[in-house]
Image (cartoon, rainbow, N blue to C red; front, side, top):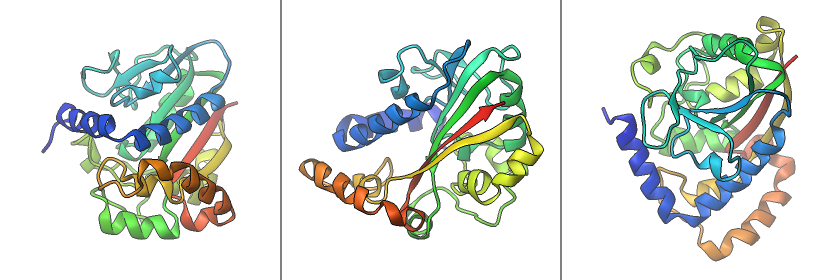
Amino acid sequence: MTGLVDTLHEHERIWSQRPLLRRIYREWFELMAAQFARVPGVTVELGCGGAHLREVVPDVVETDVEPTPWADAVVDAERMAYADRSVANLALVDVFHHLSSVERFLTEATRVLAPGGRIVVLDAYCSLLSTLAYSQFHHERLNLDADPFREDPSIAGDPMDANIARTTLVFFRHAHVLEERWPELTIADRRLLSFVAYPLSGGYSRPQILPKWAYTPVMALERTLTPARRLLAFRCLVTIERR
């Protein structure tokens, strides 16, 4: 089993070699920052990886589930060492589908978030196209039949294990369950992103197909494909607010 720090070092190597990937993520980080609540409290990134969100949000507290060279602190998303109502925002970039227990995380988030505070999640989305691509070419499990609110013991034993369908299930297919079980939380915004740019960038696990010069025309193509986003999207940005 590859350790978390070893995986992150490999991700940092890929990040340094792919300006298109960095450009795509920076635009996503700017979208996330625009969603953050302006209420008293700290903004915390859970599972910060290489801590690149700090390039856009300088005062973010970068944390990870294990000590890493990039994290300011070790924080378990399901057992957060923060006082009640002390956190303004919780940011999760490519992390939500790695949680072993969505139930514990949402309960903890409800406890630590200040009134008006937000959870902002950037993660994979399973559209018709991306489900086919993820199932054929991505290394993480994809199970759209899973109960997304039931604990996944395999993930508990390995922070790099995941069900890449988790975010789609919780915030789109079973969103009513979330708001019924956690009435203090409401889904404030949902956006579907990246119809061609991200998969052509190769992400962290596939070869880059899109040349650097093609970024601008490809993003123009993305805008024309927006009406078909539910069929084509590879990513989503979800904002949950504490009432």
